[in-house]
Image 1 (tube, rainbow, N blue to C red):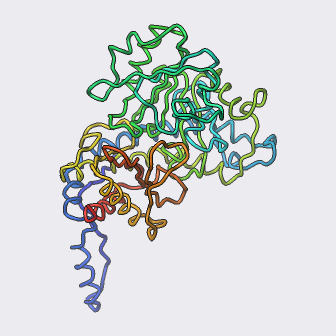
Image 2 (image 1 turned 180 degrees about the horizontal axis):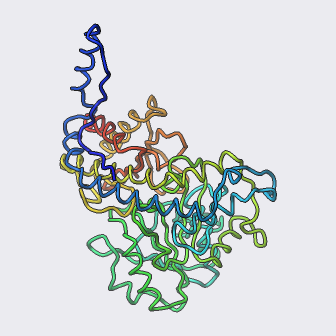
Image 3 (image 1 turned 90 degrees about the vertical axis):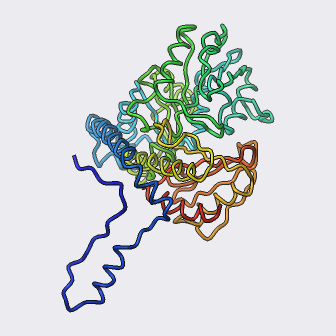
Amino acid sequence: MLVLSCARPVYPTLSLSPSRPKCTAIRSSLSNVHPFVPEVAKAADSLSSEFRGVDNLVACNSSRVLKAFQNARVGSHHFAGCTGYGHDEAGGREALDQAFAEIVGAESAIVRSQFFSGTHAITCALFAFLRPGDELLAVAGAPYDTLEEVIGKRDSHGLGSLKDFGVMYRELPLAEDGGLDWDVLTGALRPYTKCALIQRSCGYSWRRSLSVEEIGRAIKIIKMQNPNCLVMVDNCYGEFVESIEPPMVGADLIAGSLIKNPGGTVAPCGGYVAGRKKWVDAAAARLSAPGLGVDCGSTPGDIMRAFFQGLFLAPQMVGEAIKGTFLVAEVMASKGYKVQPLPRVSRSDTVQAVQLGSRELLLAFCEAVQRSSPVGSFTKPVAGTTPGYASEVIFADGTFIDGSTSELSCDGPLREPYAVFCQGGTHWTQWGLVLGDVLKSL
């Protein structure tokens, strides 16, 4: 196996004739150029062991994806689009669903452009499970901001939250170490607790994200209390960060967005729900309508090809994002900032949080990231209200796909402790370049 060094880049040299001394001088000059500021270069040089570990993870997950594509007999005819009701679809939906289900260890999956966000996919899954009089129990503390109106924790103004439909809600606080409170969870279920919600990523909370092993342990505790209690995992930012996924440890459904990890920076839109077939079908009925399910809905051909290609590239893109989190943590911790996860700690998602401590520093960080982006570098991000969020939020996302967090981006709510949440990146060196501007701005 070829192992690439994570030391400073070595620029290629050209074969130059003696009659071209000027070019030789340029070549000599280039050999002394380093694209990173000293703090970033030092951090990158120190992370070679961690980067090799990520490369091994990428190889493992890429092998699983390749096998699933082969088993689904993916062919170029699957990239053809369809129109109208989608009844003339050439088998791409079925092949994509089959491959995705195998990759995450699920009985079934629905992967569709009609899911326009991770929140939308998660909502369809929750409405598949829950009926009036049932209770939804969030076992990992408060859910992500955009789910608050879905649940009814924040007033949805009668637009159809779970609370509006008579579904009760309760959440378990986290333990002092930021993880699940195992003692409380052991006796947390009530007779009418129909669904337990586990958020894998940290969201906008200052806590560590959950590993699949921890999720599996929580599922066992939940099922011991009530085998019929259904477990829904918000899998956003967690796909391909480990070598296993939540359905492999007993999750009944998982859901997420294709403009995050599983879209591989290529998918232009979409989301997924995967898990037990009965409940995937129920979630599909919430996306479309009862009786229509998974066998309808048109998808243009260019999008279908992008879904397959993005899914195939996803392990590699996630690997680069993980390396980026290692680098951000290493550099920012060296400057005295609190980071979550800590430097060199194994990752459970692609999010790296940095506690900046003030509104001004949070804005400055995001402005620096925007300046270093390939799209919209000339614009200045402005904090403001965003649909689904309770607080003012600032986003730096100079991405090719609007809102894509598999591409390099960062964001954060304008509230204590003024933490910025960094994610994505098609290559870790992109974060290396961005951090140079960030350090100057701070």
